[in-house]
Amino acid sequence: MQLSRDELKRAYTSMYAIRAFEERVEKEFADGTIPGFAHVYLGQEASGVGVCFDLTDEDQIGSTHRGHGHCIAKGCEIEGMFLEIMGRDGGICGGKGGSMHIADMDKGMLGANAIVGGSPPIAVGAALTQKLRGTDRVAVAFSGDGASNQGTTLEAMNMAVILKVPMIFVFENNGYGEFTASEYSVGAPSLSDRAAAFGMPAQCVDGGDFFAVHAAMREALAHVRAGKGPYTLETRCSRFLGHFVGDPQKYRSPEELAQARANDPIQRFRDKVTTAALLDISELDEIEQQIRARVEAAAAAARAAPMPALETLETDVYVTY
Figure 1 (spheres, rainbow, N blue to C red):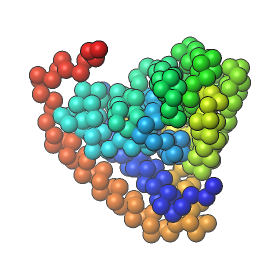
Figure 2 (cartoon, rainbow, N blue to C red):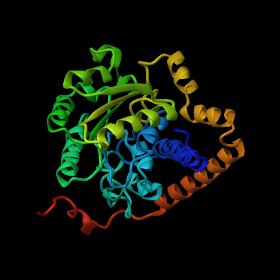
Figure 3 (spheres, one colour):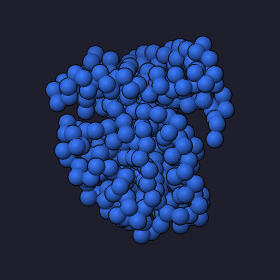
């Protein structure tokens, strides 16, 4: 299905917002304005946007420690995200969650997760809730190649099949679980092939190609929304930076790093839509300028914002039922 001009602009806006946001996060972390660690999504923009493009605010996603891109793709506001990442008052989680714990229930963002393999069990619970309520909503669990070896993930896949819940497992295979290459740590050559062992359909697509990811996700959504049970999607990605901002990446060759940059999903999108005369270069450039201005303003506002008040220290810690 051919996307309209407005849809193509929306896709590029989301992808470029992730790019500009994460490049700014990289700079802010180097300047010392972001506490803790930062794990950026640079190079994987097409995967998150392709997966989330047709999801609604009522559909829910569980994320990973590399979750900024998923947040933006799901519609979280970058202004609140900057406040949160810098630990400032007014952040999406009150400035108390930080980079690896951003959540926004209004957007169906169940939260980034510092636990490797932490989101699949949560998403299974969310999907089961939707099934019991009789809705057509779905839950999506983002994981990586590292999380694919975790017992939490494998148990969640099995449970999703047994309970026949409306859920999609998305494995963003960027080739590394933290610092360890998946070709060493993952026994199966394909993560999507593992789904068959649980009785689940699956696809493996080029995660650097928005259109490939989007098309595969549409098939997955049609399957899941029809009540046929869970689905697995593996997107093969290339992360530009290391596990965290500042990682020297001694485990990757200069040639590999150059190849990752050459497989830029932003440039690939630009090339496809301009070559096919679907959008003009000037339209894409205008989107970039608008996004850059918004990101700069959001980062500046976050740097100037106050820290959370001391009296909020013990609020939002436990849920009272």
